[in-house]
Every structure is written in structure tokens, then in C-alpha cells.
Image 1 (cartoon, rainbow, N blue to C red):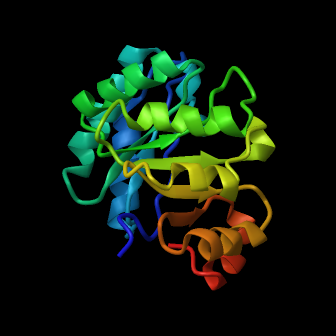
Image 2: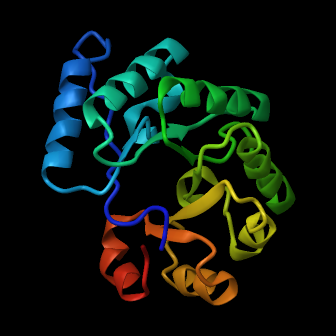
Amino acid sequence: MALWNGVFPAVTTKLAKDGALDIGALQSSIDRLIGNGVSGIIVLPMLGENASLKLDERERVIRAAVETVAGRVPLLSGLAETTLEGARTNARNYVAFGAQGLMVFPSLGYKTDPRETASWYKGIASASSLPIMIYNNPIAYGVDCTVAVLEQLADTPEIVCVKEESGDIRRVTDIYVDLQDRFSVFCGVDDLIVESSALGVT
């Protein structure tokens, strides 16, 4: 059985009018989502202003989410960094803050080639024991974690899931044909949910 399955909403980080974190609104949103049956929660996604927040703000978000989730569903945090050193450091930090998994973006500062992309994810995976969901959105970030790249990552046990948002529905089939059930595959774009579900995404 897949480690992660079902619906994992990426929760936006709530801010007050002055730009300060609104922890109360964040916690209310998380609690409402869980109450309505989601299977997991992801905080600090890119739409949650991940790359714009300071580390102490990210810590407050993760710790507040841990408190609210209270073990009811898995809690993942987005990990968006420009350097491998920074990504590895914050992977370890997020463990200390209470995250149970990471949704990892490609390097935000450089469009990596396939070899570098595989090295990026392997490097982050070796920094902590947290399971990793790769966020594959080449349309937005210019880096495509292709089936060939996933093949290079298949021997990295911490990498368990791909949030697939390449826009090519055939990619789901290609992943399953080439790698069987090695990775959970999530649909990352709402206008392909029907097709993705028909192809067996978790």
C-alpha cells in the first residue's frame, strides 16, 4: 500500500494585512480541512509564500500545524531552497519542528539538467529520514523530473512520492509502466484529476 494516498491539500499561509503571520486563521483552515475528510496536510507550499518567509516564520507555521493536526493525518512541509546546503539544513530543521514529510521543489535559483536534478533530490534525501514527495512542475519551475530521472532515484528509499504536474497525462502511465508501484503518484493539477484518477494515481 502506498505510504500516502487520498487528498493532500497545499494550505496557503494566512497573513494579516500588515504581512504578519495569522496563525489563528491558518489553524482554523487546517482544522476545517481535516474535519471535512482530507487525507493529509501540506504547509508551506509555494502558494503559501514559502520562499518569502524567514526561517523563524516557517518554524511557527510548522509548529502551529503540528499542534492543530494532532496526529490525525500526515503533515508535510514544502521545502523550497536555492542551494543544496540550505535545503539539507532546513530538511533537518523541519524534522525538529515536527514535520512528518517533505514536499520538495527543485532548486529555485538554477534550472538543473537531469543529472543535477537527481543529485539535488538524493542530496536532500540523505539529510534526514523524512519521506519525500517530489513536486514536479516543469511549467512553473523549468525543471522536469522525468521518468528517466525517477529511475535514478528509485534506489533512494526516502523518496516515496511524485506530485505530477507536468501537464502531460501520459506521464502517469509512463511512470507506472517503467517503475510499477515504486512511487506513489499524486495528481498536482486540478484540471487533470479525472484523467489521473482513471490512470490509477494514489
